[in-house]
Amino acid sequence: MKRALFALICLACTVFALQGQAQTLNVATVTRTPFSYVEDGAQAGFSIDLLTVLAQALDWDFAVNRVEGFGDMLDAVRQGSADLAIANISITAARETQMDFSQPIFEAGLQIMVPSEAARRPSLLQALLSRELFIAIGLAFAILLGGGMLMWMFERRAQPYFDRKLDEAWFPSFWWALNLVVNGGFEERMPRTPFGRLLGVILVVSSLFIVSVFTARITSVMTVDAISGSVNSVNDLYGKQVGTISDSTAANFLNRREIEFTGYPGLEELLAAFEDKDLDAVVFDAPILSYYAAHEGRRIATMTGGVFLRESYGIAFPTGSPLVEDVNQALLSLREDGTYEEIYRKWFGARN
Image (cartoon, rainbow, N blue to C red; front, top):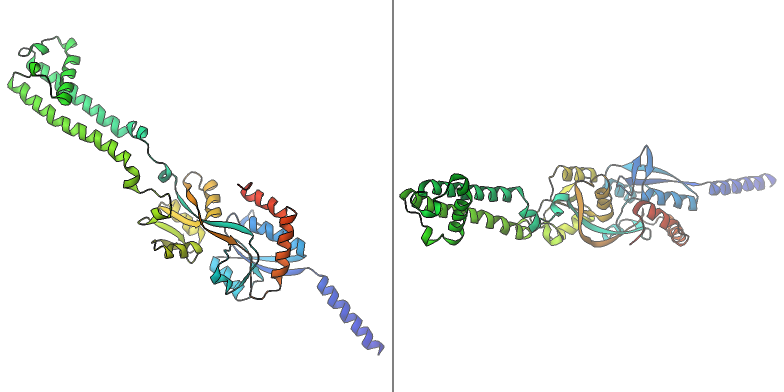
């Protein structure tokens, strides 16, 4: 009897000791800067920082398993090989049928990123100061001055207006050619020699070309938005080279809108295609694209339009996981004591 009682006491002590030990969890994640990535050999990112304080609050130990693809991370949760997954995981109705989620840990949405040069709208002033227009104007002046001096050579003995010395003739000759082009000339200054009259006709015909070049240049700038179709919203994506990550919420959105796009297996491949100028626009999670545009891509990328298709990120668990309730309570505590806000400001600055 005493032996049985002693054994029972030992068993109870063993159970209490095991319960008192910190729980070690297998955490699946994927590289999605700034939510989850490796920096100097250490796990880093908004989601990793949040996971760390959750583990401290719940007395967990955790081991991070960084997988290659986003789908691999979700598969680990579905199959139960991971206790939870954390990164930038959107809470969707389809995913809710396959796994459980914590309460939202981040409010996000989709946004469009375009090359920096595509976001710069040419102005009328830029057009007037452009190299092409200066060349056109310079050519026009050269034709008028050259034509006027040729007319002086032919007409200086036949037309009194041109009866001047060389050093005095260049501006009156240029002025005559300019009036010929703009006003059709003056009857009393009409060329009198056959060569002068032929040259006058050539100058008038040439003026049609000069005026056409100038008009076309100005018109093209004033209608550049309509012609080039710069991307400023979702409606501008039709007919463009659009890229996103396959099977993402962005890909599903583009499919619903019947917008053709190229799907990439991961973020690294998507951004590489953008840097190689294979894409006119990238549609993906707003915070990830904004972080890239402000850091690695600050010289080549810019965000355009507002955030659309608002969505929430959550922590994913296998269906029926007993961890969900504890995590939700801990998240509420972290929001109430300001810890969550500190982590948010560290990675994204103050909220607007």
